[in-house]
Image (tube, rainbow, N blue to C red):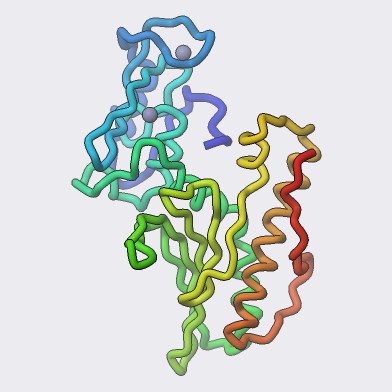
Length: 253
Ligand SMILES: [Zn+2]
Ligand SMILES: [Zn+2]
């Protein structure tokens, strides 16, 4: 993911792999040309990602440009996908997301960005102290009558009477530029993150503009969740810094 600027710090998800093996792989010299543009080294090891259809990644990465998770070498994109999946998912005959999709990593990334705000919103909606907040990791769901594959991350409140409120963010594999916001069963709205809009248009805004757009995007997501909760009959909680952001914030510079 974007925070991994250096491959020499092995990225290890606890519970499955061997740290020693991962550390060795970080420096192990392979014999393939590195895919990183301009790198030129021939010490690459192949990205080990194989999707549910048996397609492999066909890239290779030198020690400086590879990422290692649980004893496997990955390119940056697939490291993002693998690290978004539940612990223990990889390597247990579970079908891996399609080679080209960014759905799991996008939903995981955005969910992490707004996790604290969503928890705050939910807990403000139900003031009963006996209420319980349960969160689900990123997992595969099938939506619509054509059972489209999507990756979802959910937060759920259950009160003492069994009443529950469920908020989720969801990205479909076939529309992986959009985050869908779901409150209980219904999808309230879909939005495209600003960095994807920028990439599609080939624009690179100054860092402060980029940061502001990301903040606006997070607020917009929370505004949509508000709307969905109101639709479900929940009173509007007063949360500092959250506003209804119905206006589009994803404009080109
Ligand atoms: Zn390289
Ligand atoms: Zn790869």
